[in-house]
Amino acid sequence: MKKGLIIIFASCLLTLPLYLAQAAERDPDAVLSSAEGLFKAMQRKDYAGIWTYLSGESRSTIVGDTRTAMKSASYTEESVSDDFARGGVLSRAYWDAYLENFDPVLVLEESKWEVGSFRDDRAEITITYRKAQKPSTLYMVREEGAWRVGLTESFWSRK
Image 1 (cartoon, one colour):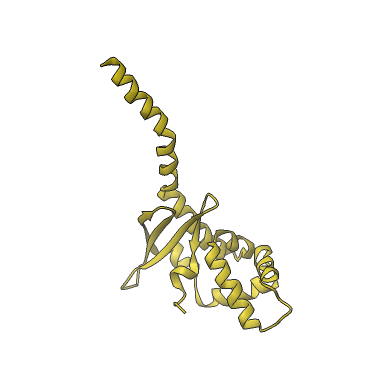
Image 2: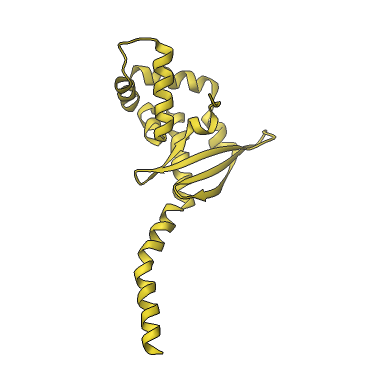
């Protein structure tokens, strides 16, 4: 009997780090904090900061859309991506145009946020603007140990 309890106790101790790691990955506060960070960076017009909060898929979509719109062979995917990462001229032009049509204050101060489902390295946040009839879903993805916002995955129309 005593030997059985020791085995159970030891196995619990051995699985505790795995459980704690999974709990950290499913931390609603971390998910909300990352999403809030994106909208605060937009509010401050911190162009390089905005880029750090975006998922890899969102970054790739934005770079591709920017290159297509520019129709210039002088800009490579890498040069456009580098410009966005440092908050350069292309980045400022892109986010200024985006922010003419989107006010992050409405999301930050006039909306209700609720963390929805967690699946592996994915999570959803439901954002309901106080005057909206329907909520919006913000898709989040865990990449390189941090929660990133799937901006294009959430709001761009499917091609």
